[in-house]
Length: 135
Image (cartoon, rainbow, N blue to C red):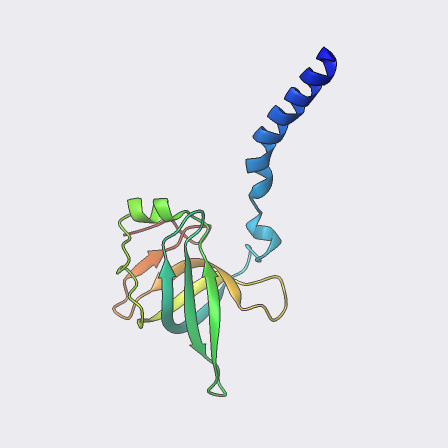
């Protein structure tokens, strides 16, 4: 009985330690981290949340239709806030240029964010291999 108890205890401890590790994901499994694309559009939302901040960007296609792109950061909301970001750093309604990593899944409208260029030329980064957070 003692061996069974110790085995269950050990298995529980191992599960507790490995659970957070298995919950994390690889950016390279979803986006091509060796390529970048440029999107120009209007910011629809910005969320400085953990584990990864996000943004929604309305991009007008050549035929006039508007497509909403989901933008994920590779850094954390905490890192962006420490770098000086606030809810108003990239205001809703601002037209920006975004350099980002494209999706691996054909037709997906999600990108892994990099450099954001504001109308006045000021640049910000949402982390990752395209730059570090800048405030």
